[in-house]
Image (tube, rainbow, N blue to C red; front, side, top):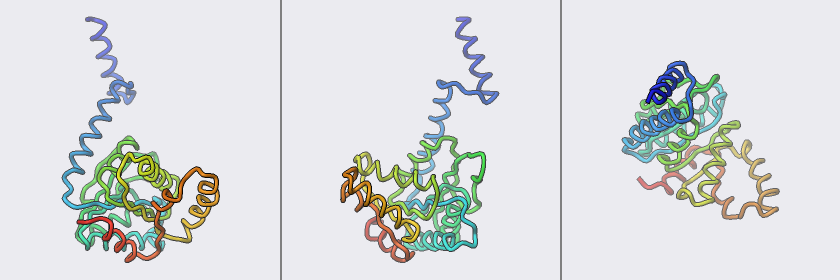
Length: 225
């Protein structure tokens, strides 16, 4: 009994001082899942996730494009979900909020470049990437990928993998900017497809577009309100 009390006291000390053991970390993970599920399940409209670079400046054409797409989606009755940070995420949240719609930011605690933007009317803070990803996948009816970096690639290929392996139902994946994404798709065809590591059907999951209205119309046809 004394040993068990000692373990409990030491575990509490670890929590209070930021040193969390695996078994105690489980409760934080559970708490993040519960908060995420409770908050996101309250959304009463189909949501579209827009992701892209956190480093895109406000005066960049990509920023304006993301803002326009988000505003257009809201006007058609969709909610908009982003990673909640700056750059493309801020642009999409801004477009959604200023159009009078639901603007969700799923923010992740990072040592740099990720602070919550002021344009989310629902903001949730996460410590763990994998929990945040579950929220994107579970509550989004379509993904719009703007130009971005490693994080954008991560979101893109995870969604493609889950659809390819039939772990989730297929949903529209739209990449905005043919000049940015075209080379990647060419390489996938030249290497993946040519060497048999993916199928033609897998490539058909990806749609590249340049016009905001085309993006919105495509989602309207695929995601019924």
